[in-house]
Length: 306
Image 1 (cartoon, rainbow, N blue to C red):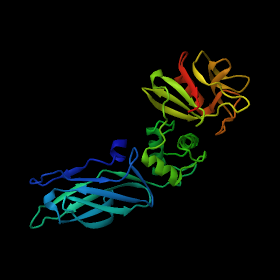
Image 2 (image 1 turned 180 degrees about the vertical axis):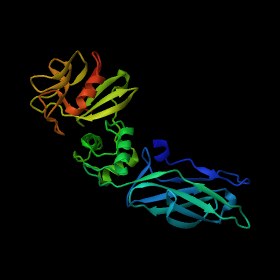
Image 3 (image 1 turned 30 degrees about the horizontal axis):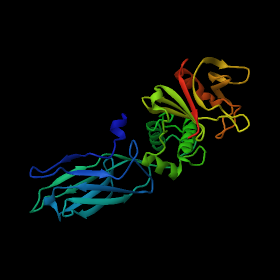
Image 4 (image 1 turned 60 degrees about the vertical axis):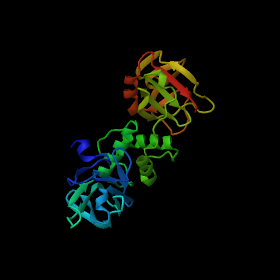
């Protein structure tokens, strides 16, 4: 099923407005993210507007999962046409709201439907294959983190969560949890590009221990990495790939792209979440082929501390 049909953004509404209405009907959710999400157990508010002439009328707001009505609130339309209702949502899956006003002596009937919001269980774990996993993958992918969108919490998803946690200053572990979900809902954690004028290039942020592929001034894929430890630091500066070496060499370096002397971006069997290499930019071996394929001779490589 297409993402646009299942994971619609909160915002504009499908509505049937009375012919006499002076303003369009609307109903939107207080949820952020791409697609919009809310953590299970969190309050979700739907804010609507009706023509000013409907002030004082009662409207029923239903929280729905598909055709099933989860809960109903009866609220009064304010003098400026506004109304709202808050629900605590639990479980996982898609929800939306429908506001219905029955015809009265002073105002005709109307109904308006919000677009969908995903309720996400933050406590996913390795091996999980749930709707919540897919939503988290979509959110990470929308922010540029290298992650499959397959609905399975696999090793690649764990690496993407580590990278995201690095970007947002959280503990560098393979876990989601409420803190990660709240951050994703805010749209936080996008990689800040230092050199957008370098065109198609890679940036290594040594403070965050992240490697990012940059195109069009934005990070299109972000990976966890490990740079040089204090005794063998990574060289800082702006370089270009000058030599490429596919496969595994005698030092265990996989798919190496050299950008200065013996310094390279390469896969390695050990990639801690901190600086631990002999000076190279290590990335996990499963990520090495795609990074190697993206790099070319002459690709700019920017290495820096913020």
